Image 1: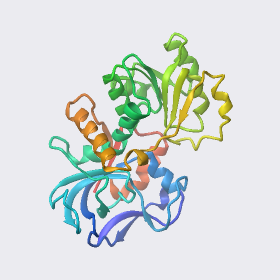
Image 2 (image 1 turned 120 degrees about the vertical axis):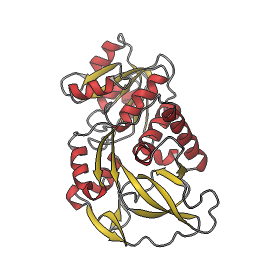
Image 3 (image 1 turned 45 degrees about the vertical axis):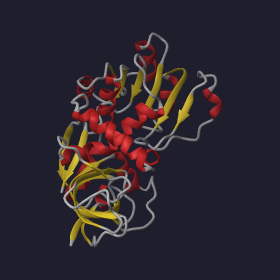
Image 4 (image 1 turned 180 degrees about the horizontal axis):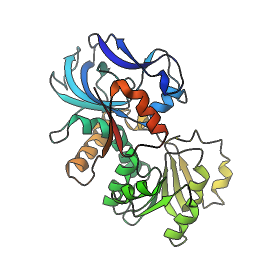
Length: 324
């Protein structure tokens, strides 16, 4: 019997239960992974609370992990037993072991340990599609990054700086501002006490940011739009404060003929080609040492409820990993 964190309905962190599950043998096109580390992401909260619907209960949540292949189903040729592997964006990660299709599974290269892999796949591949596909950042671009001291935020700041951007980052405290600055953020904004749009305009000599990467959602949507230069792009890719309210698209013209998009990593990992492109780019930049994955919190998987409480209370920075 294998242990996993399961939920039997939607609710607060207290509904995360450490329970026995039956994993079984991998089916056709599947592998069984013995997991050594799992990543914590805000999307896990969305599934737990019901913001993102779950088809049926009980359900194992969690979207990324790393471990070792321990069994292979029929038709699998790309992996072998003993391979170190990791994956993003496949529900069911909060478990000691699992069976899953191979579409989003990749080998972990030498030089990257399991904890680092589990901490970076969803966040790092999100940063990749934001910076390289959604709005391809160019040298000199002023960009606005929300939750700049968070898991995605620290990767975004470092990678954007590597691309030559001027990085403006929203943070909730002086401590988080220092963390963001140490990872490539040129201009931290303390969003609790400063006007975001006014500060962005001040930093950019009145021009505005080329792009706003907004993971907060409802509470910051207007501030993001008002921070942009003409023809700027608003990228809303998360809902930490709740989903964005319905929008009158007519406001985008007077604000500067702005663009708005709502991408997801699900679309950006929908094909094997997309998965490998994002994963390989991420592995390369991490192995080079130019983007560091900061694991600032570690919990035992059975303590997932406490990790969710800390995440929602904005008490975490960088990446959080569960050990299995």
